[in-house]
Image (cartoon, rainbow, N blue to C red; front, side, top):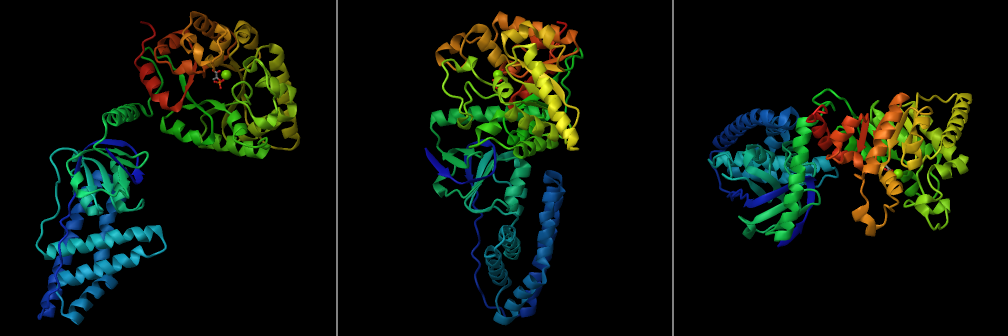
Length: 540
Ligand code: PEP
Ligand code: MG
């Protein structure tokens, strides 16, 4: 097996045979011509034919890759009429008595070199375009046919470089990926590859004897595997299958509602740990964010994040979600999430220790900074707050009092904020058992099944020795979920799950039957759950 490193210009996995694309670049000989006028006419005629071919390519590309990408062929037509370019060719034929092929090839090379030397990535990429139009005119002058279909089975096209006119001519159903030695991220080949949704790599130093061999294009990491080992092949076949599943789900389910066959609607949200994760939330079409683990803002720094830093993060998330619900969970550090500057000290039993809301209620300054940031951001979107590790009504009342103080301060400073729903996480058996009382205090419950399982079964979720008995399907956990839903609904408090169990498709129907209002899962699971919801009939 050989693994060649290059640069990815479009992601994805392709597995198949290599087809080396040999342009058979023609040698252009210099010959002396006597009838200069006739030679100039030959050039002019070839140029017109080239423009006609480009017009046909434009029409083909318009259907296949859309107007924006097809425009390159219009640009090529215009380049062929560029005065500097045309004059340079005429001048060479007249001044040096050379044949039109030679003049076009030489001027094309000179212009390409000039573009390549420019200090601008976009202009650099245009070098390939000049070369492309010149090659076309030369081919016409030499009486060659246009390049056509390459293969009768799907292949990975490997080439030195590919001109846009070549990529567009190739029968797409026969192309698995593009791999080139040259080319740039901004080249039209790269743009077309992206539009065609085919993985593409550049900067791969292949050799001609690879033709016909099996290969893997890893468009995520920019690696080209030739003659892959069985284990590598298996790994990428699985990745490819995963990709295909996701693409299929996306195509089928993007924009569709989260409603069962018998018309039960559920809010399908996603969990995030950072601002950057919002891209995955939107790409997977979640209808909101059900858990923003805000502690990650504290984990990545050497000191407490300031109010403004937090405000900027929450505001960006709210704005990028464009009015969809964003539930921010307040700081949940301690236990497995240790932050040096909090100086929490070593504890014998950290999972049951000084953590989450316990720290926030003990250190109101830290808590208020976060609440102020969240409230300020709420003006820019649809933000809700929830509090982790609740065990008593008293805690909720203390929180509410602090929230009122924060709102009063903001009012006094004339800082605007929005309507913010208040919720709590249900992740302790205590919270479950008093969920009837807690429901009177808040707008919603979000069940944290990861911790709820750990505390219900008395199994440390971090202890690998206990993995086999850490059972979120335990009847005790399921009964607790049911109880929380019933108690919540009696008080008009909506109920969701944001722990990992929410993404367990073997339980989706059970949850729907229980009457859960929301499921918040990792972004990559959203469409899988949507598929299950839409195929479920809770009456059966
Ligand atoms: C949970 O406990 O289920 C939860 C969602 O919170 P975390 O996993 O962050 O503790
Ligand atoms: Mg938890």
